[in-house]
Image 1 (cartoon, helix red, strand yellow):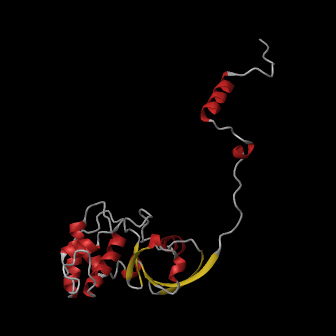
Image 2 (image 1 turned 120 degrees about the vertical axis):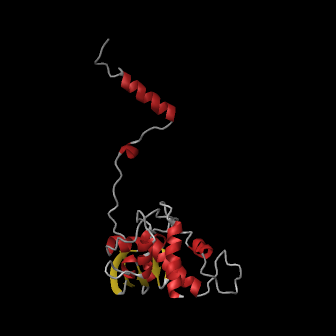
Image 3 (image 1 turned 180 degrees about the vertical axis):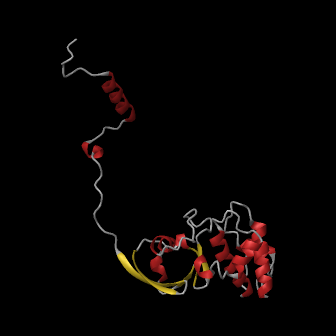
Length: 212
């Protein structure tokens, strides 16, 4: 056999040809060439907001979430990135006194807003009453979801005191009760893999009772 013949196919060539035929895809030079990376720069916008009582002005990509702004630009890593889809509540912060999932909102939407993270609620030397109660009742366990849980718990107590009803409120015209059922319903968006829910309710009940 003439091994120098241009028409000679090796076993490898035969297998590759068969695979291409079976898939019905013919590779092209364009497909084989590596994709060129875009050199265009993302549009930046100046955003000013109050974070934990301090004014912050940042130049941000307009697509940056509030969560990434806090963690990557302001280095406030107490706020956790969990599912990044608004389903677990680990990224909960307070914006103008109301709790939100910071992974679902863009920073540019909060120009002039007051943002409070877990770092702004209290410090190890001077903890917020809710932080103290979580420690007392072991409501934190592994601790990953705890910042979001505490921020949400603080907001829940305020919501009930303001008379805002929930799905389990029996009378929408009456002030809701500071009951375990109300607390559990309102905290249902904050998931705890450790299952410390009963301890969290105990911590919230103690804080709510002390503020009554």
